[in-house]
Image (cartoon, rainbow, N blue to C red):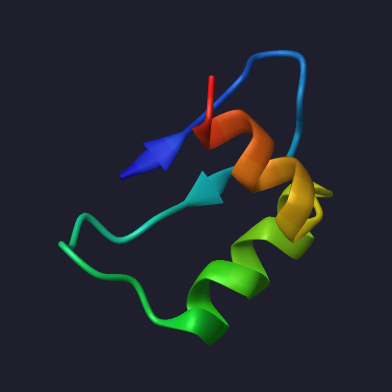
Length: 45
């Protein structure tokens, strides 16, 4: 799954699996400029 925003040059690519490896998730969060805490906050919305 690739998420894109026209105003952003980076793309976030998340595997469409039931579980995602910790290293994969952390790497994608880093590329997105999110901390783990910010990611969890977004999940809670």
